[in-house]
Image 1 (cartoon, helix red, strand yellow):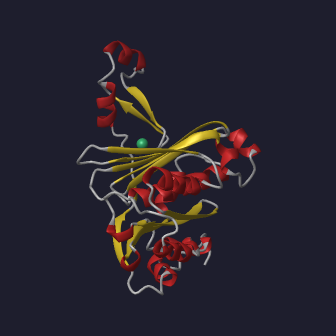
Image 2 (cartoon, helix red, strand yellow):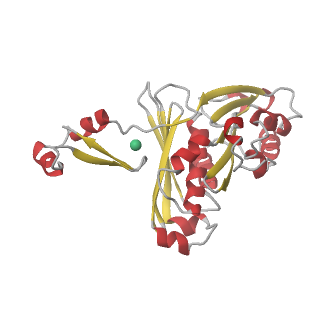
Image 3 (cartoon, protein in one colour):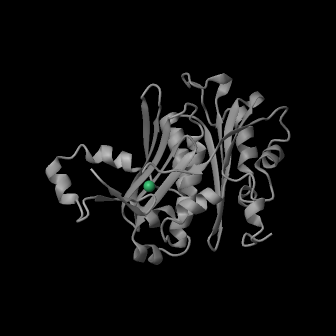
Length: 303
Ligand SMILES: [Zn+2]
């Protein structure tokens, strides 16, 4: 079936949903996601060149996978890459209660010069990736910063888990785009030996036999399986871990494309500026135009 087939629009079930799973005997847990319409909506806000579209799609899948680890309502995950010397100087994505958004600030000409499938360094030059978990109820913030290097953004996120959280973590992301259609899928698997989740992780090691097995099985996932619209994620999961005694699957929150660029939000931001400055910002019609980079739209704010 071609992605350009119009009938696919109604048949595209199982998209933009996150699946949670646990493999109790191996003390492993994970998330799987396949994004379609939500991804296309985010990507369509700007006229991105193909390499940037691919990068942002990968980042959004990572954002959904890591964001879906948050259990409490109102908690947020932010993925932010900042760099200099390459075509991309800023990439920001976030996740809040299933709503994802993101954008990439880049230099078009430099992206062209970097070729069709540039490596991470060719896109970012030198930079770092910050991953931040903001927990709603406690107000706690966990942030880890890793260099933007290696084969992909996905690898940098794996480095984050290894260095900052010290949790053995495997991430796989695949992106397929044809014309304006884009499908992306991903999987995150983690090991918490002896139910250590949430406690001190003194024994988290990459060479734990339980984890080695899970990592080999999960690592055998093919890119085309992650983006195959005809292969439900649940079936893929069963196929990967069919040797396990038990794999528990739990549908988690559905994804949506969300932004917080409401007039009320910007009024509260602008209220912090002195009136003199606000007067300078005002247009002839008395409103202050605010540019939302995520949505690529100007919001006229009256204050
Ligand atoms: Zn917005």
